Image (cartoon, rainbow, N blue to C red):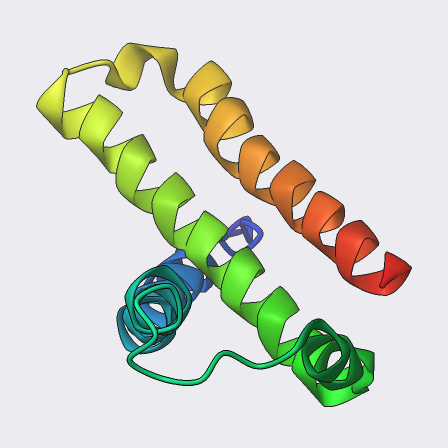
Length: 119
């Protein structure tokens, strides 16, 4: 008789890693350029505070920003986990590393959701 093991969460974590990397690579540079370079140097007209607040009131905008934050955090968690495993050869501490990395991503996602819902 064969015993059936529950499926490992590894494919789901790789999915979050790849989605987070793609989202972070596409959106973060644009946002950094706009809000860190173009608007402060007056290359583009900066939106007013009222306009940005109105944009943040839209639930789709909140959902996109939450997705950006959460996926980027899970991308970091997976990359940092394997950096500690392979780069520093700390695989023997796998349980605390997993708890720290993915727990940090979950806590950061909860904080970003809370901050976006407060607006």
